[in-house]
Image 1 (cartoon, one colour):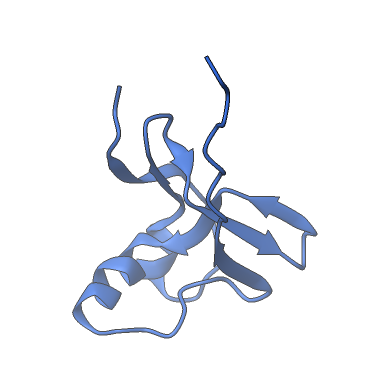
Image 2: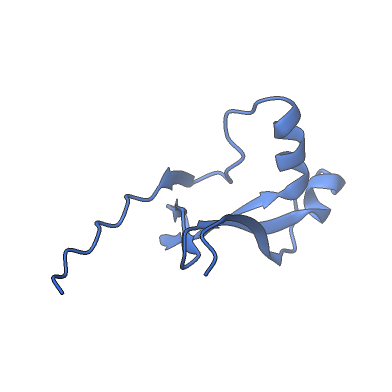
Length: 93
């Protein structure tokens, strides 16, 4: 049982981003934690009208933002939000 915290690239993506470094490092980033590896974020894509558990972001921007803070690395039309905690089970034994 793993109760840790995991940040991983789910898939590498193709892109038409003008900046070559950002274009070549674009990936789907997932953040998971807890015993079941539950997603810790969800992304509402208002353009595609979807909700998913990963964000499409250049990995280069993540490394860059660890050095200097950025307001948002989200793609236009997306909103990153934390998920609400799941209520603890109250099953009686």
